[in-house]
Length: 208
Length: 320
Image (cartoon, rainbow over all chains, first blue to last red; front, side, top):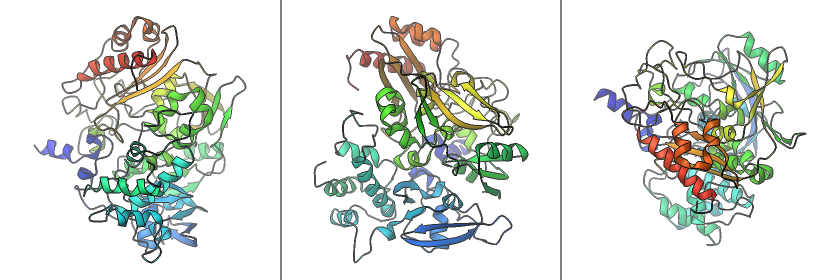
């Protein structure tokens, strides 16, 4: 039984990405904070339009640099293993899992977090759509969902194909199938998926 | 994660030299697999060489009409490239069948070739695993084997190679270009790149210590209908149970590689030659000598049916 329980708790066993299991194992630890260790590295990048210079233990993920060193706690740590998408941010305009990259790998890059997209007073259109459609329950995955959704719009407009794109040579028509497939890297344990989908559809002017 | 030292590479040869000069050094590119493994302490490098500063991110036409894909080209960019979509669409299809949008934006061409198995016993450091700890045994042999390999296995290891992209590259007769610490370059056929597990499943490929992948090359387009069919437990964001990468010509011949069934993308020239006789004949050749376990014998039937569906689709008999 013990062996079976261990396997059931092993995310790899469940195929690629199973947050419900992955997040249940244990709360992931933040990577060590000491900045002055002998391995410490300097890195400088732009976060939400502001230049930031840090001296970090090279083990520090971009996620931990944002949350623990820059105080930007909007970006969330879910599984810390690239399975749930809660840590999604935009790196030079492209969405990535900030838990699966080291901060020191991004010298000179521009990072946008949920704080950079909008504020309660001046929300990004995607944030407004999520509010209007109640695209969340507990809200923990929401910053990642919104960063991802903003990038999905950009990817569709740039003609980046997905698994459900029928014709690789034609422009991509936004559709519910396209949105569902492209958002599959963002897990919502509350199951707000249908409202998330409605919110994103609305940002396409309902033409999806 | 264990402590490590970190450096940014300046040239491919310097990166290779740095890796060859230090015990337990690793290259890091996208990091989407390596950092996951480092957090689990399955990989414990003492030194990381960040190769992202290298200018290995171009996709260029080769003189013979083929394509040269830089090692650092991200999965998203490779999938979206106009020539790949037009001339090698099985590769686009395989890429977008894998991982998530976030991961494809980081994951690189070379890194994807080197992605390590998702065998649950490799991931669980409390379990015996000859790949993770040589000589410790294999817990998978009599364990839960649903996702594991049925062919090309050994008594020491039944892990699969988890990738989608390499299955398409295998069908496309891709080659892998490398450089070593001395600056010497070589080109390895993907057919010779992955090593059978035998009794050293920890040695997964033909790369020497410190050798750096610089590019993947494709021969001129072969034409034909390109199809990548992936079966999995979820519609998206899951590893393949079985996948088929196929290039099917009008005369019924072509090339077929199968994923999710072996320690490497699985292809047999004899099976390609039998394609015109139908999926059954080709599958029989592909899976001759298969050694399925209790939980994964279904993959033999699933692969034959997936192949049949692919051949029907190629003839226009079945929609995608």
